Amino acid sequence: MRRALSVAISLVLFLTMANGATTSSASVPKEGPAFVTDPELMDGFRLLYEQNFPGARAKFTAWSAKHPTEAFGQVALAAGYLFDEFNRHGVLTSEFFMDDEKFLHGIQGEPDPERMKEFHAAIDKARAMATEKLRTTPGDPNALFALTMAAGMESDDFSIVEKKHIDGLKRMKEANDYAQQLLTNYPEVIDVYVAPGSANYIIGCLSGTARFLLWFGGIEGDKQLGMEEVDKTATGGRYLKGFAQILLALSARREKQNARAEALLKTLTEEFPASPLFAAEYAKVQGRPVPAQLTPAPH
Image 1 (spheres, rainbow, N blue to C red):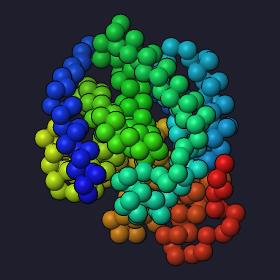
Image 2 (image 1 turned 90 degrees about the horizontal axis):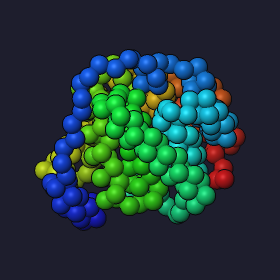
Image 3 (image 1 turned 180 degrees about the vertical axis):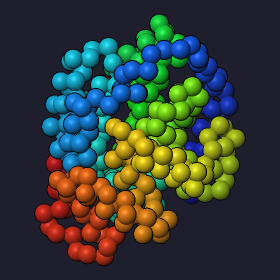
């Protein structure tokens, strides 16, 4: 608790000095990854949710080469590295989510340095591309979409993998700000709800004092609202739908909503039958033994 409180106090000093961002409501064509389902990208995310990380990264790399001006290609590539590291440490499992020490303070051990180097390179490239796009086309939805996802993933990395909690909370607020800018003018970009939703849920899990200080600094924390926002992506999202579904299922396990978790995990196992992660979590919520072949090995 004292560590969470210290993080909250430090972050307030940063947030209360931050200037709010503004966007243009100028009309732009509704095209690109924020609005259009691209089959090649969807294939990459399917491989990602099946824990075929090299295959997913190959798809995202190929897509980026064909769409060199789209920052989302680098966002997707970064996801391929981050999810790989999550899998290595069992982050998207009920054991991790239901253990407050891990859930609120991060992994045990150290991340793979080469994998995280590639993750940060992709994030930096995505951020540079999207920022330049906003410079020439203020309020561009695809740029805001990419920046939301980039900041959200970097928040996860800092908070969970690298355990740099103040940096993680700064990126969390950045993701929230970009998401709100995007959703104000383009509420149909359902994938983006997973960013404020996960932030609301995680902050809602902190102590009351820490939540109050973060609220004073501009970050609200409401577990129920967070789960409702994640549910929007879990129900109506595209690329991030699978991610939102596993987040919601594991959050439901934390909240002892096992029937809801079981229904979500059943859906995931049916949609991604090649995923050992989803099959293992479905077995756990049903109280069945997890077959040895479904237990991921460190790599």
